[in-house]
Length: 231
Image 1 (cartoon, rainbow, N blue to C red):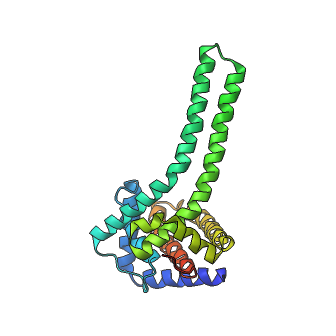
Image 2: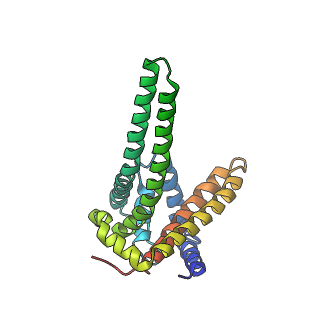
Image 3: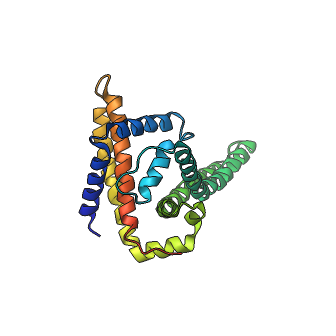
């Protein structure tokens, strides 16, 4: 996997999609603001990114608003379902910890019970974090499958997902995602600085956030194309 080429091709795609196409860029910036303002209850930007993740070239237009909304919500649902295991683990251990705290209070603050309760909560946080990380790598690929087929059920075909990731190489997939996270971290530092510019900083950030979202979606779409398809 040529990671440098992936980044370069994704950047070129984003540049072609947005530069000299100001109407599209302005619309995406507005959708980014609207989605953040509504806490993804109006996920129109996510719906657009589903189109980019599907591998459309050149970059698609911002249209068919109903479809954008539906695809955005399908993406929301996939993400919500995939985070359930981590949430349940945290609630289980956190609940046991809370019971331990209550039991300790009932007996006058027993140190052993308090220690066990705290240990349960910390263990829950650690285990939930590990599960969340593992699940995130699977969920991200699941989202790509959904974007390619348009069928939400394909996002939960774990056999096919594991088969595709295995064909691509788990190491390759993990490195690919980590590289994107590093790029996102660097981007975050730059945007954080630009956001401090008085009056216009937040506007600049809105436009850059839309551009980075397109870049990241195209990057992942290119990686998916390297993985043999599975039924």
